Every structure is written in structure tokens, then in C-alpha cells.
Amino acid sequence: MEKNISFFFILPLHKIWVATQDNIVFVYIAVTITHYFHKRGAFLRVLAQVVGQYQRRKDVSKKLIQSAENYALKMKCSHIELSSDISSIG
Image 1 (cartoon, rainbow, N blue to C red):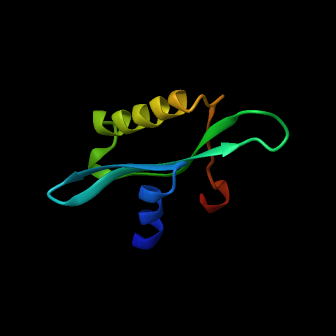
Image 2 (image 1 turned 45 degrees about the vertical axis):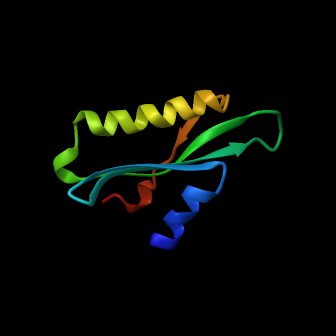
């Protein structure tokens, strides 16, 4: 996983925001800009979002999402897409 994460620091359309405490990652969000095939423009896709059990419902998670939203605005994205694998629920 560490090698995969390293791509988010070098690929121009991939970004990751990480929050740590005592050198332990407890919240992160990874995104990419995806260009439409059938029309002009792009959107931001959230690829991963993890929030540690004890950090849920706190401002740090909200701040990382705001960072992703600001990046989407800067990149002139039409929207933000967040997918969920509902087949793994249950």
C-alpha cells in the first residue's frame, strides 16, 4: 500500500491529504481528477477516505473534505463523485 500511496505525491492529477498524531495516520482522503470521455470538462473522484474510530464526527475529517472540495474548485471540476461498495455491507 505504501508504494501505491507514493503515486499520489508525484502524479499531477492525484492528491492525498493526511492527518497524523504522534506519527500515526488517523484520517486521510485520496482523490483524482477524471476527465469526461463524452464531453469537455472533468470531475473529482474520491478514491479513498478513512477516518479512525476515535476521530469520527470531528473537525479534522471535515477539513480534509474541504481541502478536496477546494482542489475540485481550483481544477474547475463540475462535481465530486464518491462511490461505495455496497456489496461488502452485511
